[in-house]
Length: 211
Image (cartoon, rainbow, N blue to C red; front, side, top):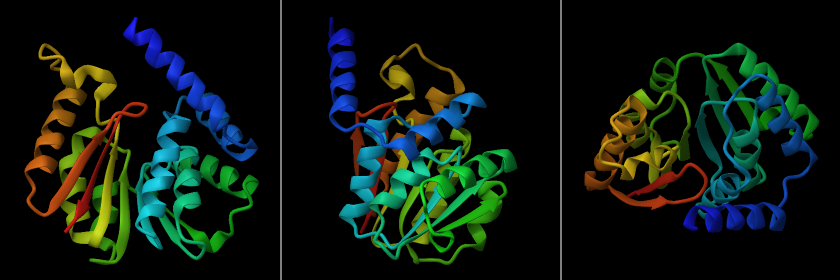
């Protein structure tokens, strides 16, 4: 009964705030090649988080086909710039198509092909308002450490898939992704410089503000 109620609410939210043609097309590209993409409700929260800190510079780990990229851009300041990193060149090709179709100016997005842990050390310290992590779950602890260096005071670090499909609450679930997300949640909670919240939307968002 609870699962049905949650499904009904998710459907209602999607109908209340439907995605436009650009987002729908980006989502279709992702589906065609089997690339996971955040759902619309998660995208709306991500946009809100970016807007809430007046983000002018943001980093995205895991470009995919551009779904989360578009949501983030809509939360950034009008002159904001998003740096999006993905190791897969095909993913970024799809994202470029999504950005072009959405009419996004080329100067607003910097696409970097490469492994996140190799790219992050090359980015400027204390220069970003938001870091969104939706890449290799096994590397989340390293992404967190990098974000603490990259973020300005008051900036946000946000992790996708934080609830691991609901399995974080199942004591018997010991698969690699679930264990990784539990460990990340503990790291974020125990980091004294962060004020954190678990947001139960979509697959879950873990968001934290740097003091």
